[in-house]
Length: 310
Image 1 (cartoon, rainbow, N blue to C red):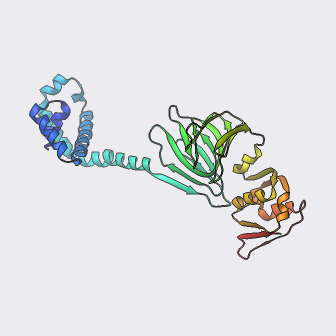
Image 2: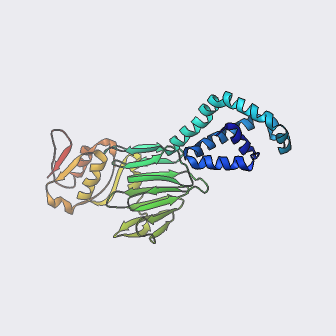
Image 3: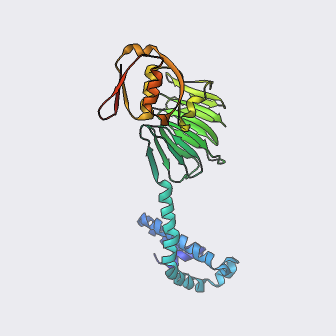
C-alpha cells in the first residue's frame, strides 16, 4: 500500500475506492495491521512537529497536496530518528514492562527490595519472590512462596496483589507480613487494610483490620488478634519465639541458618522455649544458651551442614 494513500486515510481524505482498497489490504495479511499502526504513529509525530498544521481542517484541506509531499519527504528524513527513538523506545519499554524477575533467597539470608512503584519488600530466608520490572495495567501483581514483609505504596485505583499458593492478598497501601510456605499460610496486618481471598473456594474471603492476623487451617481462614509482634522482627535480624516447642524451634533455625538439624533424642520434643536472639550471633551461640535449660549435646558434620542433637 502506498504511503500517500495511508496518509490521506489518516487525514480523512480518502475516496470510497481508496477506503475499500485499504480494507482489502488489511485483510490480506495480519502484518499489514502492524504496518498501518507504524505509519499512523509516524504520521502523528510529523503532524505534531509542524504547528502550522494544527489550525483548522479547512486550512489542512487547502494545503493537502503540499502536505502529502512534505509528509513523505519528512517521513524519509525522520524515519531513522523517529523509529529509533520513539518506536524502538516504546518496544523496549513494553519489553521492560513485561520483564519478570525472580529472587530466590538462600537459607540463612534475607533480601531487601524496592519495587518500581516504591513498595518495599523484605524477604526471609528460603523465600522465592517473583515481580515485574515495571508495573503495567490496572493491578500491581507479585508472587510469593515463603515469608515476606511488605510496605506497599498507595496508588489510587491500582491495587497491589500478592499471589501465594492458596490465597491472594489484595491491598492499596499498607504494612503486613505474609508467611506462605507450601503447607501453611498466615498474614498479619500492621497498618492499612488487606483482603485475603481463597484461590480455590472463592467464597472464602476475609477483610483484615490492623493488629489482626489471619491463619489458614483445614481450608478455612481464622482471624485473631496479634498477641506477639516480636515474631515479625525477623526483618530486623532477630529470632523471637515464645513457648515454642523444641522441635519447631529447630525447624525455624534450619531456615535462618541454612543447616540441617537432626534431633536424635525424642525426649527433647516435650520442652518449649521463649527467647530473643540476634541471628548474627550464630546458631551455636543459641544452642549453647538453650543448653542451660535442657541437657543435650550437639555435634556438627565435617562439612558443617548438619548438626546432630542428642
